[in-house]
Image 1 (tube, protein in one colour):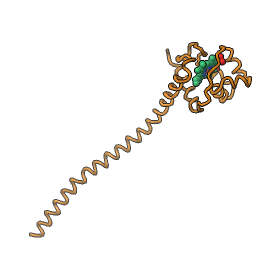
Image 2 (spheres, protein in one colour; image 1 turned 180 degrees about the horizontal axis):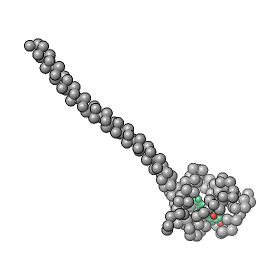
Image 3 (cartoon, protein in one colour; image 1 turned 180 degrees about the vertical axis):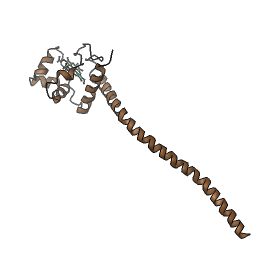
Image 4 (spheres, helix red, strand yellow; image 1 turned 90 degrees about the vertical axis):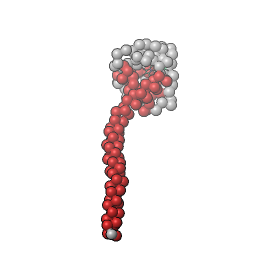
Length: 152
Ligand code: HEC
């Protein structure tokens, strides 16, 4: 009789153990699926990162440049259209364009030929942006190039 009750206990134990571990197996599967999903998410983030930096460039442009430079990059405003600006500076080290964006009057004061040439555009001096980082200027240039090739 005792053996029988042990067997029943054992059967119950096995039964409940199975019931209890089933969700664990499910959980493990879910966890695995999550891992795979997060892998995909990381890959996607690479893409989102790119478009995020374009978004950052757009926001920087709106905040700092759009008051003087037309946002379509093709029409004149207080400042010249920025489409093709990088190409126009391509005869000079890239850092010159960065210097211009950070502090245009200073580059002009150094008699930089390109700075002198652009200054003929108007009597308005470009605002100085000493706090813009190189990363932000890259994002701005990326946005300018991107927007320039879009139809209006
Ligand atoms: C106060 C108005 C003003 C603001 C704000 C301004 N600019 Fe300018 N920008 C000018 C003017 C005016 C010129 C033409 C040079 C001149 O007349 O001194 C110019 C010229 C430039 C050039 C040279 C264009 C070329 O063809 O080589 C670049 C590049 C430029 N700006 C980028 C920017 C960026 C980027 C911002 C924002 C971070 C900005 N500017 C904000 C007025 C402005």
